[in-house]
Image (cartoon, rainbow, N blue to C red):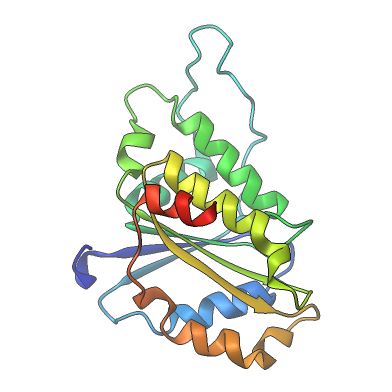
Length: 200
């Protein structure tokens, strides 16, 4: 693992409302990162990302380099050692903004000369989510999707921090989630193959 002073965490907030339960749980976990770790926060609601257009089978299959907020987000993603997907559980999986963000990874992998996938290899992917139900098994599809994303990109998998809550602020009453958040980012990531095996 990179030395603490060399690590940069990109927190990708994918909620459809500001300061929601998932963001609150994510910020609680981030508070425990060492002072030397750089943090960057990307609130997808505030970024003007263009609609993703699949050009894989059009012409030579390449995608143009992004501009504007998409370029900023791409650069932030590539500049991070650790990418944290903070998505509430919507219909048992990612929120729409997070799915849109990951769709853009498909295009970035096909920007000539960028080598997006190669440069993502070895980074660590983490997940944070809050669900309204008590049964954590309903979050299994989200967990599996993140693990397989880490595997495909040859990233490491840090784990998924889950909390319970629906109305704003309810997650702060989930003592188990808050306790897990205390040391969540101190966990040792596993490699991509182990992430997929564990998901199975």
